Length: 178
Image 1 (cartoon, rainbow, N blue to C red):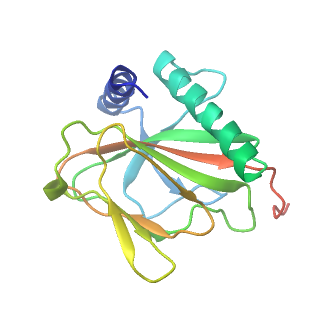
Image 2 (image 1 turned 90 degrees about the horizontal axis):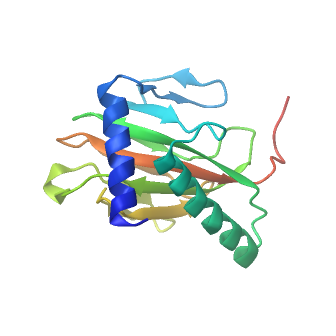
Image 3 (image 1 turned 135 degrees about the vertical axis):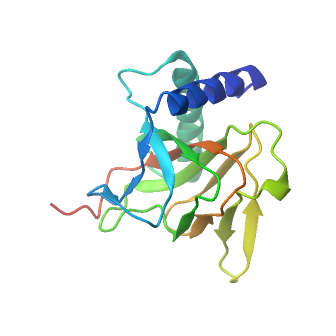
């Protein structure tokens, strides 16, 4: 995304947050509210995308198609939402794959935080297979990609509002149950 596109997303997310259009986040297929996460979200609606959301969706779709083709992942669509963590809020260690549903294959996080300083915290801590971890700070314009079912991660608390777009590139669910 260009700096202007990133700024447009940032401004829209801020305006929605200020207008209290973001709702407390929920988890799982049943969308339960939990203390495991402290963010507020607004899901993108594919039939009602704003211009900044459409620009993001177009770029993610291009990336999804290329990843699917290059890595034979069978990705068919994506879902996205704005996420705002207020100071002190985080998200406990978790996987992005829903229980009994393997539709989410690739997780993407696009950061919207201008002039972020690492001393402000707010890193996404990615837990690696060798039991180490990698902290990725939420600098505006950074896109983080990882496999949804393979990498546990958590959001560490920050000292200022932390904004991002969370996105999941999906395959047709094989393990879904009715």
